[in-house]
Image 1 (cartoon, each protein chain N blue to C red):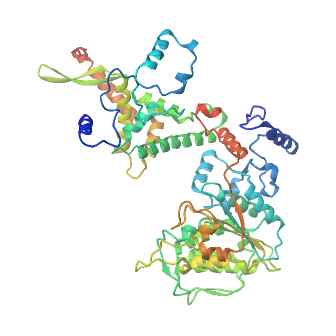
Image 2: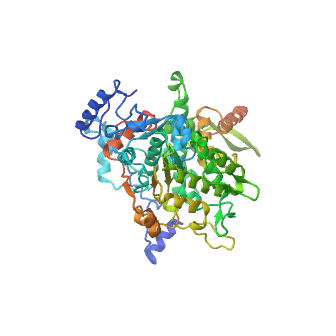
Length: 230
Length: 360
């Protein structure tokens, strides 16, 4: 759809916004490096490969950066991915708002618990919402997945290893669908998300249950593991 | 416990050292740069500007059952303590309150400023001062709540052309009873009030009975509010009474604006036709002695005003300005460098700023 739009643009009118990112870039183009720390490292610290990489970047053209990334210290690729997955009908503003409210809510609950706890318990309480989010997501990632493989006319559920991206995607997807479907209708999304994330951080909750069920199914179908050929 | 030595300041250290020296002299144990041990607003002075003082939780429950902004209430719940920063505008008003001659008519102080600069919290600081001095506090948390989102509107029993709001009146009376417990059994009414053909309040009965009457009989609660205001206004300056009256209104520009309440034939109700607003406007006139009126402008809750308006002239309108004139305007600016740093240190101390970059 985007490719056709590019072709027609040459023929008829000129689009106000030229969609460059999803057009098929020439493989010659390199990915942009957004973080400031990568550029502030002096020459001496780099290994030979990294020096080569730098020289290449000076010569080759670079793709345009998406509007979702920034060089701010608060930019997090995992959080951006989660926001994109939560987004509906292209409403990124709303998705970001929900995400910030979720993080604020998590921090509020943890700080409240921290101040009410006694001296001994205080060190165990984690207040940083980013660490809680990352840890919760890590706890939700499944180790093995199931694939439907056809053998002799029948389909079998075969346990297969998953790539990192697939695992991350599954964890986020389960979190979002769980919050959307299985909670009370009248609670806000940020409230539901913060409850679920805190539960996952403590290794309890519905998303953890789903992960354990998947693991159990994979364990049950261990006998078919040799049907996998890759 | 934040040690004074390892606090790094964003700006020049000269002022900080001076403040440290003062802190060491007045308090034997310098707790920190941004907190002060003085929890009595009467003792706050220029040296405490930029420092946070803790409001005792007993005072919060009685004084502000619903007077604090929502986000501040949540902050109090999260941090398990209520701290307010001592700032220049509220210190100014408190110093005026200490020096006024209470035999003259009541002075009107108006906090104005941009959105989010701290007008409501300055008002709460001044009200806390009045409470600790033993004054009777008449606190209306938000005048805009009385001109919009009205669930029940009754025609007034006292005056046919006016309207009553029983729900808002009863909530306010309950809060008033909570705040001013000790005065309810001391003050006596000077007039006789007839609520219906058979119910009346005799002259010389206690204020507490009047308030209870309003809370139990919901239909006449707005008239009870009017009666309470009238009684307090008449009695406050008299030589016999031993109390000072502090009237604190947040969002005072709502009294003279427009309202979104509609009558049954879908025409808008003028705020003057509401009993509560009518009586409150009478209280805002400075024809009584023995107290002070402290008010705040607010654009956030106001109806039909542009977002950029913050000056008294723009928000009060012509009628409002004429009725409030003469008043003492007190501008509430944004945080200065020192106040900002103090706020930052407070949040760091309360473990609110969690990002690793925030330590720099």
